[in-house]
Image (cartoon, rainbow over all chains, first blue to last red; front, side, top):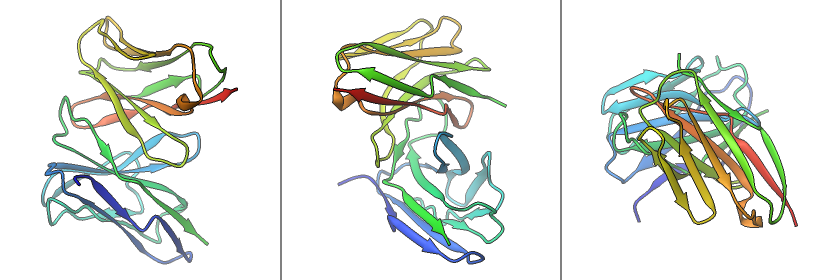
Length: 114
Length: 109
């Protein structure tokens, strides 16, 4: 089955710890994205990547880091510098970032920082 | 930067009634997309509108793209319990989609 997988579904961490969220896709898509979703605020873009070994900051990149070493993978690290990390994190991919780039979302990871 | 506003934030609908959610962009869009997120789920693509004034239908859902390509609407007729969820519009800029805050729909049976 083609699609996007995110793991784990639920993640708990202590304050001050870095944590890495996994995102893998087998759709052969060039572009990948990370969003953060908080209640009542829709989807906010953290980082996106148009191609392997290249990525750009989105609207709320502070306290986050990413890498894109393989086309299929786009892991997100939530660092201790992120002041309010508890949220629902969604990874998405699309064939292109340009016009017509319909996005396919993974099931999400719900991160809770204690 | 590009901003997409969506209203209303919440819509409580009696089963069988119609409702509309609206989306407005601060800039002209190349296209607009609509997604639906069921409770506890992830956003799923519904449709994309590209042409000025375009209207598309999916069963009881009617999507419109404004003449100026800065606004869009989603109209649902005869609401059913399966319509529960959050509907997002997303405006396409040069390199990214800008999502509205969504309209969360609940249905009274």
